[in-house]
Length: 156
Length: 280
Ligand SMILES: Cc1cc2nc3c(=O)[nH]c(=O)nc-3n(C[C@H](O)[C@H](O)[C@H](O)COP(=O)(O)OP(=O)(O)OC[C@H]3O[C@@H](n4cnc5c(N)ncnc54)[C@H](O)[C@@H]3O)c2cc1C
Image 1: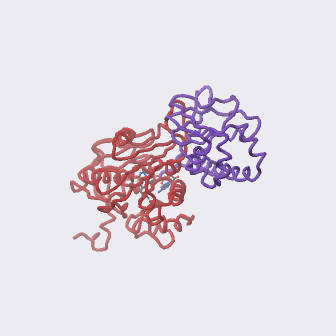
Image 2: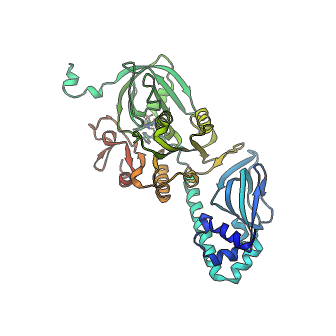
Image 3: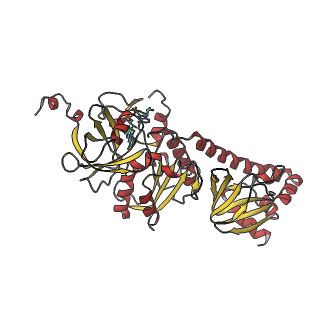
């Protein structure tokens, strides 16, 4: 896909609606479309984190191998979620497995390319980091509620 | 007329109902099928009965059966304390006392022609099941129907077979998530609010009904509102401590409201204020 039409496709993503068209064009230089089928791993713990993913469709389980209970699903992510903040921060390695539960369509943003652009244009960097931070904030809220374990002693 | 009626105590007298069937739902939750006291007990989705275990005590429990089948009285109960544990120990043939039905109903008026979004957490699916039955038997009254259900672990999923059957239908969307994705689980993990974000209902016309632990309801109602559903069309069930069920004892007074008489179902626009009352 040409960067121009890719930028327009990125603009459709709810997470990125706050980025200007110029910034989307700039970002699309690092982006490509990826499809991955149910059952496959998008990445596994310990591997190099080279991409930031924007999920357009599908469901992906973030799993932790926890012997002796085998694998536990910590969280599932799906359309509108951003996956792979590890590309932004050293040591750029995945700390979790990402297993596809339902066929997924994603934008993959190349980590090295993205980091270079963030350094080259701080205005772009500021706006993109706001997008990331807003998403992290939403995910933290979800996780906070999840760890409250509200159904444990509840009797409605 | 008895003396009890003369002094207005008739609603306080439990009537005997025999248990005909007990269904074990999960490790701590079960469903009782009872013969209603007069052969049938008409109710509206969301209403509750006071169930009395002779010699132990009385508890408010929502009716979880089909409003179009009032000849069977169905209650789904989680055993948490003295009375609910005593109910769990009961077997077919045993008798419990029943008073009710009490409380107001989920707003499932005719010809709503709106998207219906049912958001349930844990045992909160039980009081909402009559809404789902109603929506399915009056399907043309609604546009799209969504059931978004969150619970603690895969083994805490209530009405699992029914959820599976509903999921297989083409005229409703059922999404399920658990807070703790234990080994072998390959469904969604995360809080029920994540299902709200991803469901494609039309927020400007949707009506949402939310039931579960209070924290879950607060977060879910907020998420629905943030997604564009009007606060007047988000309904929650405030099920704090109730004793008499008929607005006499004042046990469930929350600000100006007597929850058992005026509620337990409120639009979020009003419940928001009541959620903030911490004393009860
Ligand atoms: C209108 C209404 C409808 C209800 N519907 C159902 C239902 O369909 N199924 C069901 O399992 N339960 C339902 N409940 C809750 C149920 O009434 C309580 O679990 C029950 O009263 C507990 O009594 P107990 O003697 O077994 O336990 P208790 O010894 O009284 O309490 C055990 C524990 O449960 C807590 N608890 C008691 N009542 C409530 C409550 N209302 N909300 C939150 N925590 C409570 C107590 O604080 C204590 O920690 C409903 C409550 C109301 C008010």
